[in-house]
Image (cartoon, rainbow, N blue to C red):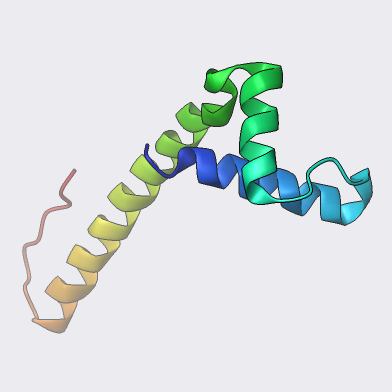
Length: 82
């Protein structure tokens, strides 16, 4: 949650490099411009989708890691954790 504003600025600066034109000249200018034009909440755009993706990724990763470790240790009865 703390790093979300930095991610928003990073994505917007990458998008302008792809041909959208120069909108931000630097990181600090991007922070202030987003905050003044869209409000401070603009720095946290997309946070719900970000956390949804992270939550699902970690559940899948943890289950796969658990299943692989059970197979490597030759455990016959393993249960998928959630």
